[in-house]
Every structure is written in structure tokens, then in C-alpha cells.
Image 1 (cartoon, rainbow, N blue to C red):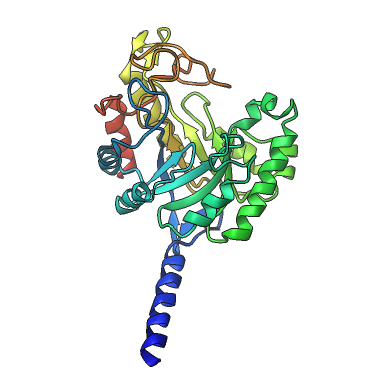
Image 2: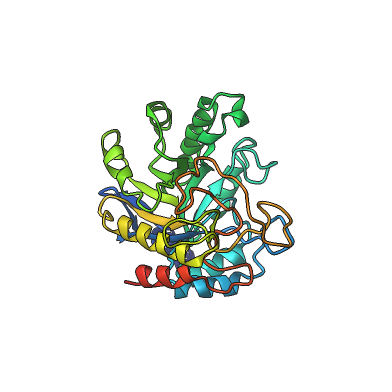
Length: 330
């Protein structure tokens, strides 16, 4: 009986230890992981192979190796990763992951069908998890919510509340396109930290003064960056594939964010690998594509959707890779 009690005590202690080890909270408007301030130096990650339209993780080992080399400590995915071996690899690489739940994903851990709660229950104690994130710039798509974006904000806020009933160990965020208005912030009262997808040329720092006038909640830049294709000449950057323009823009963006790092919880560059599925034939890299509010993309005011990677589809490093590596490893 004594041995059984000891074994049970050890088992409970191990569970508690793991639970406490994975504690993420907000302190002084910053993320804090297990008692240490955590600044996001991140990358958006949606690895869709050439010729396909859905992501898979066949290149995860190579990708994580490159991310570690670049000093990336956080990845943001656009739908949950339901493979514990992939989450284990991310954790082993010393990287955290922001898990995003979509509203209607045909039942795949989505908000409409309440299946997102199954995921939270299943993975809330996994050490790779940093944040739960609800939606991705849905404010640009009221047509998805019967023409009334308030329907989304109400669903978002309810989902945040339900997550907190299950998991008090991770903050809940949303990725919003640009600054949320008064109504969005009021309805979204259960959001702990706001993610902001921001494309203001090469300086998103002006957002801070605007935000401080309306809210004291913490923020992180959930998307920022530039692509490697110029649709027109701009100063010394010539039309066509132009890695120099992407590298220059990302360098300036990151430096400007680092100047205000006392007022922001971090930045995620969009994105890790080129997405050949976005604008045409997924077997080739097409010019084109469109994204909401993309006129602020440096340095041509156009979001060329298949050219955003810091590596190409074969994982060859673009010029921006070395820039990000230098800045993230400082």
C-alpha cells in the first residue's frame, strides 16, 4: 500500500510538473512563459508542397532546422496540428506554436461546430503550445457572417470564454486585420492579447501610438513582412523577382518593431515557405493573387501571393533569410 501511494504521488507530481512547466501568462503587457518574459520572434507557417493545395509536414525536420538557424522561436499555423509527433518535434526544437482555430473548417476543430474545444482538451498540456488564436483577419470578410461582422465578434468572444473554462494556462488571442474598432474591442472582451496583421509599408511601429489611445491590452504583430516579387520598379528595386527588395523591407520592418519591443509582445514574419497553390497552377510559381488591405505591402503595394517565403518551395534560402537570422539572433 505504501509503495502504491508513493507511485501515485510521483505520477501526480509529474502531471503537475508538466502542467506548471507549460504555463503561459501575461505580465506587464508581455507574454511570460514559466516565469520568463517571452518575446515572439516568429514565422507564419503553412507548408503546402509543390503541386498540392493542402499542407503537410513531410519537410518538418528540414524546416525546423532552418527555423532554428534563423533564430525563430515561434511558428503560427492557420489550422490546428493534430499530430502529436509534429508538436513533439516543434517542442524538441525549442520552438513554440500559436494554434489558430477557424470559424468554419468543415468540422476540423472549428468554432462553428465546437470541435475546437476537443483540440484544447487534447493538447492544452503540450509544451509546444504558446497561444490559442481565433480566426485570421475575419474583419475583412463580413460576407462569411451573413453580412454582419458582429456575428463573428460574438462567436469569437464566446469561444474565448469556453477555452478559458478548459485551460487557464494559455492566453487567448485573435488575429485581426489592422486596428480593431471600438465595437470589436468591446464585444471581444474575453480576448487576452490581440494579434495584428499589419502591412504599413516598412514601418508598423506607428500602430502603437494608435493602440495606446484606445486600449491597454497587449498586442503582437501576427503578420508583417514583404514578398520577393516586384510588380513595378520602385527606386533601386526593379520589377520582377527581387529578393533584395524583400530583404530590405523585412530588415527595416523588424528593426522598427525591435525599437518598440517594450510595447509589443513580438512579431511574426509572413511567411516561411513560398505558397505555389495561391494564385494559379500549384505546380508552378505564378505572379498575382490578392489579399485584403494589401496596398501597404512594400515596395510595390501588391501582395504577390506565391512569393512570400523566406525560403523557396525547395527550401533554398532567400536573401531575407540571412537578414532575419542576423536580427533574430542578436
